[in-house]
Length: 349
Image (cartoon, rainbow, N blue to C red; front, side, top):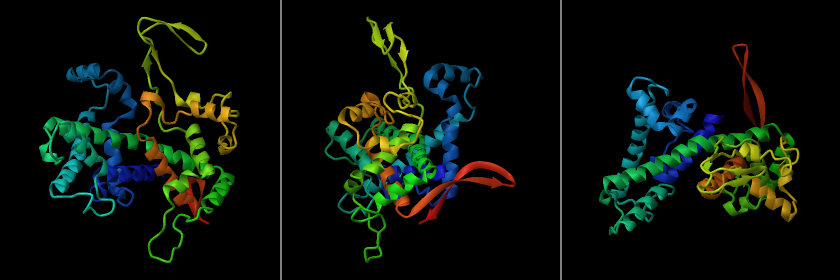
């Protein structure tokens, strides 16, 4: 199930960046999905991220003298990942050079984000048009890096976040029932029969206005966030600061904050370990403001996730697509007589 969630996020985001025909199709192409995820894990070895993020120069120096603190195949895998991204960019460049534009692109096939990036870069450089061939090699590398950053961020966060929502709902059938009642109450429920062969979709605004759907997603992300990111900062130079009960913290001290800890503050989220979407409903103004201030699934300030709004909309649509017509339950998977990891079963209702 997790790999399918990864596929949904990657298919959506690569289509948004490069256009539908040039994006991935991992939901349907299972073999390609499996290979890509395996290659990505080799290029982003999670057990070695301390060395890659905290000690990159030392890691490189140790590798040069034959000491490998990260898997030996990491460098080659990272190059393969970059080449994969460059191939998608080259295909998008070719389409734009051939005249692809918003006026003639098929539905979903305009590379919205990529086109915006090259248009902005061209305008800042004083170029008359935004054709990729007019950008310098350095500018193209910067744009390519930006695109790959978005793809990597999607792989590392979105699939896990969506999986958390589905898992929480699968473990709480009573919440599913209430959610389904709300989803079926909208004027045009997801995939409702409209007398045509095309399914109808509720508008984004209509989904944003569903309070219980919003509460279910936020409560799921509160309990099981995407990644345990410390978001480190250094205390300012030339002064001491106070944080909570800690006073006179000197300058240059690294401070990290974890959403997992913030989300389990009993003063803000009573019975914090319980899954209770209702806690997000019918709150007084002061309580609501405090909960929002402590909700850190997407970070805050300069470290806030740039894709927050897009991620929430993607989660809303897939949750609505599933739970309008299906229920999910957790089941124990048994393989060759041995109980494996829990799975999730979908049942039409």
